[in-house]
Image (tube, rainbow, N blue to C red; front, top):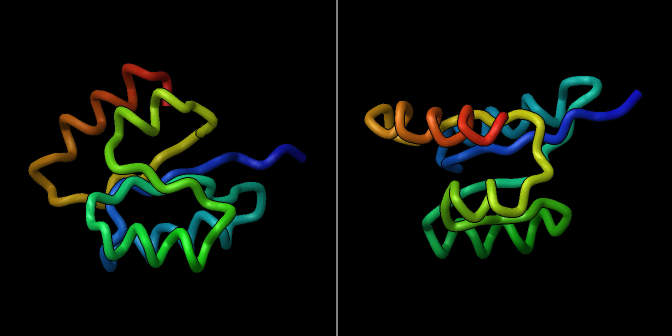
Length: 90
């Protein structure tokens, strides 16, 4: 069975929870994270070298390679990010 490739946008507490859920579901795996914090990006790159880390949603979508995304950013940004994802077919 082919695995769904997932991304988490925003890697605070809820982002970490959603990343664990994606990896815990049979048939899916976390392949990308979008995070603006340099510290969190550095930790992600060290601890999860198989996960690509991007600074913004545009970078993620330009690279492609995801089937699903969870938006775990502050609520006010959900519509804009969701629109970008839908526009890209995610």
